[in-house]
Length: 184
Image (cartoon, rainbow, N blue to C red; front, side, top):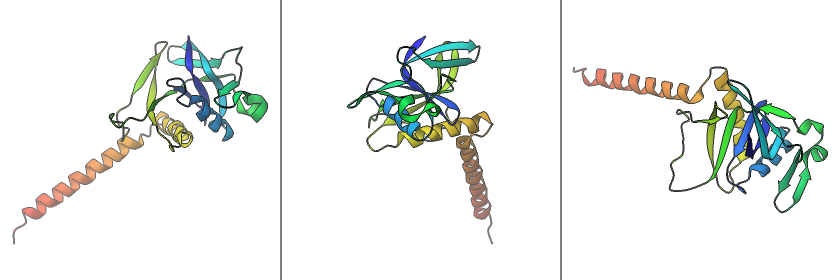
């Protein structure tokens, strides 16, 4: 299948950016490439299911590693940044869904509940990122990639924090109960 989006290799993790046209997918990818990450595809991502739990994205032959940057026009990432700035294909591991910020919506703040999306029958994590002026989505993208790798290796920072907080609250409650029942 093909999908409107942008695929970037960030610290070895395939991040697929999705969202409405003009939300900033290409600009985020351009900033990531400038920071040393690798562009796989922009605008049109061809997705192939290679195994029951594996999807891989590539760019279209026509577009190659070209990118449209509004206000500038079409640029060639490989020629601008060199061969190390591109990849021909990459496993898609996380979808980063970009949406405009809305005061009327509630956003995930703890990261305890995992959201997933399904592409070609393969379920992958989905991170919903609200876009607002001044928000550094490039750094957030790097954190998404690193946090994904921690989860792959069995470390879930949000769950660990929640567990520690619950333990502390339980100890505090037990101490208060003890002190309240201690009459002298």
